[in-house]
Image (cartoon, rainbow, N blue to C red):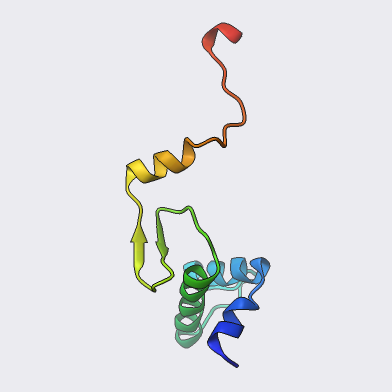
Length: 93
């Protein structure tokens, strides 16, 4: 199977399981990954992040395959955009 096809067919649920396995060394059911499985899982997570996921996390893999590290100012700008749910002042209480 082509790598692009493989990555494009990963569902969000499967990605969460892969991320869990890569970070803990175990599958969600508790089964321990072999070193080869963990290596492959980490690679799949990185490929998915680079090609599919549009992440707003501070550290991620860019579409060019390089590590992306957002600055504090970039994160604040993203979090302070027009996505506000509500804003209250101390006088509203």
